[in-house]
Image (tube, rainbow, N blue to C red; front, side):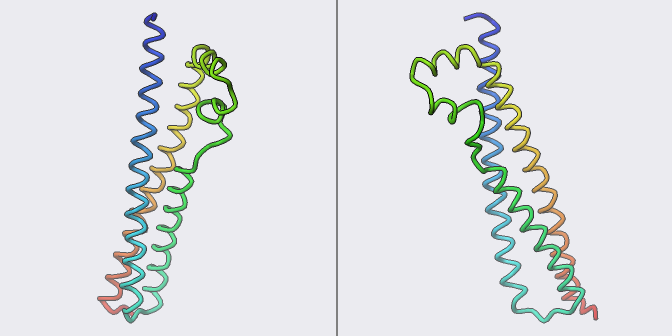
Length: 148
């Protein structure tokens, strides 16, 4: 195995590991967002609120729902991809061996683009979660403070 082949194999493993880490983070954040949504809904249902509280809290909840949507989109399988499982499922064992040997660099490039797309979605979801959480905190402060 040449140095280039070893580097390609290492790059391939690194990209796959990064996708796995991003998927793990996405799953954890999705569970957190779901818990915050459920908790906020449960608490807000029993509190007397005014119009500013409804508006700020509603916007915060909408941001959390948008974050959940981004997270779900980020974890959605890409079955139309040119590399990886969808391609291999259509090939014979010999064709898989040839495709992997010939197209490892293309696979690294394709998986890297997938990793960047997943990471970008995760980053946007984190930003929306922070903003939505801040708005829910503001709504709680408006409720406690009794702004009319």
